[in-house]
Image (tube, rainbow, N blue to C red; front, top):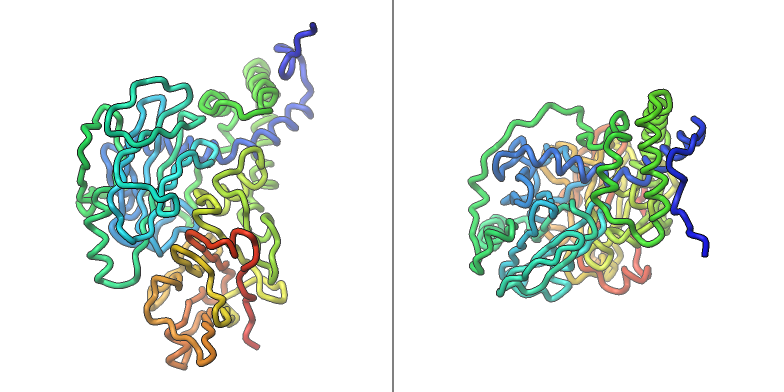
Length: 457
């Protein structure tokens, strides 16, 4: 029987054109992996759990930091932050240690733990929608065969050595709930297995140290670097075990790296091609309208968030535009760059988004409509409002039961409109974003989609 060699024969000479072709494909394929891996490298420098710039959870490996309120509008490390939940975050390094995850008693409060691998695929189901019980859960890396201590409820296996943790706990927009949530979030924690003693640890997250953050441009922090991509590629391949069908891809990419080591001229061409792929393929995926499943009124969505598998295009598009999304049964996302006429949303215009009576997003958790500026971050505004939804107790419905959100830069004159005002940036492009946490079947089956964004004439 003939032995099938996966990928190219080592040492085979290749042309520059072919080296560029492989590099272009590799860059798009590995972009989210490089993003998560470089977060791991950056967070590893943290001396202890703290907040970068006072706003971003910034802990060392296999630790976490937790916010105590909504994320600050100044956050610029991860695009499309959410002001409906209290966030936490931290990097996993399973080649260093398995990790214990604490789940406190959230009561009736909505919560979900996002736990993703290097590919940004979820590998652990922990949240209100899973009926997860309070206790301790263990996360382990590829091939781990250690002993599971008594007191661990369940073990979740990652297919990669690197991952990321992003817990979310719902908080409504009242001082009372800001106080009430503190006791439960102080028991959200992760730590190396060696520290597990079967007792629930409590951490006062309000006392985290603040670390300085470099000045930015207003856009998301750069996490992927085409100039060093070829050098980093073998680290990504070593970190993530191949998915079914990926063996030949891994072999081809390892030989590409070997070629770069033998031929400086070809390596220079690869670096040049990675820069071109970054600008020509990945950069346009920042815009929501350039990917996803089309829906009525120019909305788009994704149906495989955090479960991308071999859908490399969607994985990279989501990674570029709004990385670290939940799975569809946990959160359904709807994206909008355009009004009902297909024109780019811009703060020079006024818009309305009207949910008919009985047509608010059908959810078991909560919903929100968030506005992001051209960089997919919050735009400062006078009333410090960046989203509306379940958390708001003062939204006013019309006599017919409908709810109209007024999206505009200037303050509405009518009191009812002011109560439902979502400020937009003056004269600048922006996007709208619907989150439906723990969606009902009407959403997951595509029977409910958001209403049109109507330009006020």
